[in-house]
Length: 141
Image 1 (tube, rainbow, N blue to C red):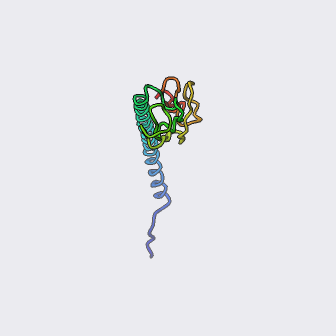
Image 2 (tube, rainbow, N blue to C red; image 1 turned 120 degrees about the vertical axis):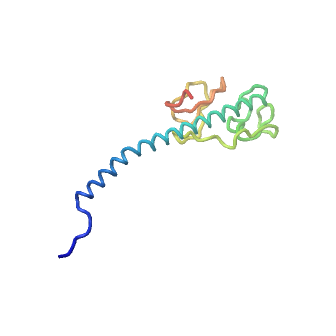
Image 3 (cartoon, rainbow, N blue to C red; image 1 turned 120 degrees about the horizontal axis):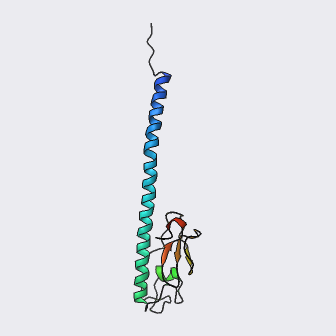
């Protein structure tokens, strides 16, 4: 008589059920870690941009980026003179505008409205100089 080798259907089903249970336990933890990493990155980007906007104000007689003839992006990523025009005295303050991790946008909405529309990566308040993420869930950061 020949001995059969291999697994029975019941043994395979038990292994599949055990793997499913383990996956159900582990996968939500990875999802939570990913969200926490994005939030941490967002907070770092906010802190960096806010400090660079403050440095710009100090070097430009308390004027906000974009108040001169240079646009906000030109003022932050290029060089400007003390009057806020494209020049060679100060800057650049950042190499590029960071990408918002939650909506993958690096565009900026410049106005005095409340952030949270989600149509841009960032919101810059041209009256107060406040810099926020333009996502509803992170507008308060």
